[in-house]
Image (cartoon, rainbow, N blue to C red; front, top):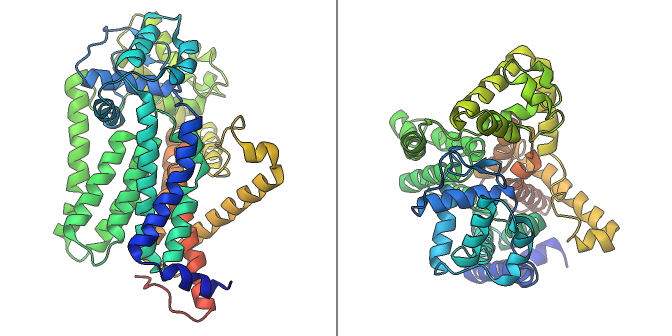
Length: 469
């Protein structure tokens, strides 16, 4: 079947029927995965659970350390509350039911027997925190994000075929989302879905002041879910300002909503913990750039950091050494680590930028590499097929970056812009899990890649593609 006839066949579907098809195709693999796999709780999950409990009114012991999350039990690390509040919403919607026994097999191995805080985690999972419900909610959220991606692609291309293909490739059948992050109690899926909503809102024409402010506020919400989204939000906010550039007052007013959201975050952190910023763990992640050269750090951090040489995650146990073993207030130790990391940049810029370059490379690593080998049936049984799929994903990413250079609708250029700005921003701040930082943003580049290919194919058969304004 030719591309023209295929497009006509899919395009003959009504808009709602095409959307329904996308939702069904996105839900099918998630339903199968949910039935066959249990939720995953990596160390970060326990930090989020601690914050969720705090917002439910539970007071953790002051100065106690959570050896599972590698953070203070009482959230002196000022972990942002967005994802924790989402967890509380899911727990409430599930009637504060316990996690099913089948989903407790892995946590039991880690938490029991253990320290007081580990046993506390397990007690909550056994009684009123249903992380299986969180897994279900995140699968549902991803299906909804697929539908919104379809609507966005339809706006960009005016084609149901491009909408179906783009939304399924980007999110609906994205194995990294389905297998790795949707079952994990972490903020990647929620923050990524919020940005999908923001891009959809700015893509709707004609432009609306109300939609623009909602999109800007959504960017702010994404930041309080996952601080790294501050970099991803910048191109979207810049585009909104640029679109209102002929009216300076309207252009600047677009920034009011995200600024207000961040002001609330600062006030929360300042009034609760005495830290007037986004999150006090930033210094520990910034210190990852010094992991290969701890001798370049200034005293008094140099000597204790030496034991974590080569460990990009060494900033977290270093916080434990300085605060708990050193009998100091956590925020004081975190401030000392932050200053040491900043002075490392000043004293050794070559070491720092070499580490940044490595982090950027990690951000641009193949998009499908984050599917764990233990569950990757395709790669284990059919390696050639997996390599072919990975190559196609890389080529589609390259097509997405080309959106910056070719004639496509202006909002379609946001995909690569979001990714590139985030690559630089997160690399400057950390050299830890930059591939993980990229995972929620890969769909935007894939959507732009499908748009570029669709527009080229339309021109090749003599059709007028979507208005690129």
